[in-house]
Length: 401
Image (tube, rainbow, N blue to C red):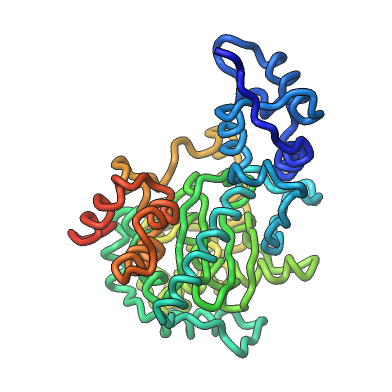
């Protein structure tokens, strides 16, 4: 059977690859099969981009998947205008900025697309969300903002301790609280050493997205770090959860504020100072069992509870620095976390874990009101039509819990 080529715009092929920061070698590695080596695919890609040859339709479909672009884009005369990316707040040991990893960038694109879907559907359905950015915020007082936000969301710390039996359930509970006020919470697969989370401000569909490759406790902290950005009407991409007090740039100042807010929200000042282990005490050091008990009580990582103790002058700062150095050495030897944190085993649970109940219910509500058809639901949820009824049934029976 003769090979049927698909005439595409070679300039778009170059644009799609370079937009994600891929070189020919990387894409060739993703395209190659068992029969041909990487050099053959690299030369083939080069010929496509130079316009000497065209890919077949199946090859173009594979490329479109790699580049996270719809097929129609490759037939345009000019590349489409890229959506504006959130402010880059990331911080790296070298001090130099780094381009976004392709997985992070495509995750942002996916979130932006879903945000436009949700905003359009919520507007058409007349949905009004509870969440609103604070109109006036004293940015120097993260403690006060955390206190106000906690009262606004009204979580009971006694109930939260019941959740803290495992970090997965704790994340789900906090996620549900944020989704109830209209924030969409996504869990996408991008590398934690590139970005741990990002936020997208919006009138009807503000978004927080965390890396499913991160540890659950870090994902929980990221939820509230990004909540601070949304309260400030900011969109941002973040990777810095470190404890610092002295900013060196304006972006650094914002990140320190958001970290302070997250810690103060998860471990409220009064609750910590009134804890029997801490009340009217100052520690030069804490043993591992005490650190573990406090962390479990508040449902946070050991790191967060120690940072709060240092900030509230209940723990020697030198002890914390020494403890953190030991932890850094431990994780350096242990390597990055293995596995895909946050992805449940069944297909429907995986979809719910990734896209969140609030977004999925927005799409399904529009479907029940005949505002979208089944094919559009399939597209908006990125699932096959046959799985839509499974998702509906799962939610009807109790949802992600």
